[in-house]
Length: 126
Image 1 (tube, rainbow, N blue to C red):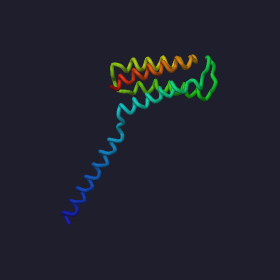
Image 2 (cartoon, one colour):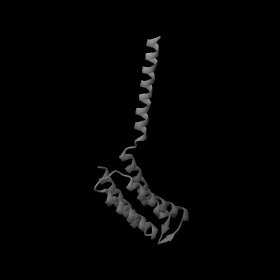
Image 3 (spheres, rainbow, N blue to C red):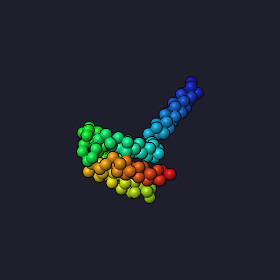
Image 4 (cartoon, one colour):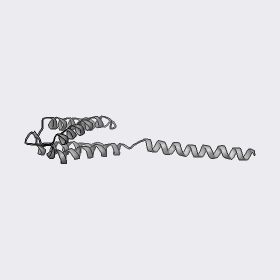
């Protein structure tokens, strides 16, 4: 009977340890995933901004609101990336991108600024 109890305790502890290890691994997203999501968000702005603004005029209010939301979100996300000498440069590039969206810059300028931010972001993740 004692061996059976000991086996049950050992088995329970082993299973519990496996669950804790798995939960810890799943709960810790990698920095690359965060940077990748940020890169995709900025790239989306570069590609779809032309559907929101043309010649300094909003052509789709919902698309424009989305561009504002995405660039604001990008500003928040860059602050959550790990410390790196390039992080401030990325943050500044995203701030400049957001300002361009706010002032309804040309699609060409927004795309250029978005690509600049993403180039700097790649430096941060390398």
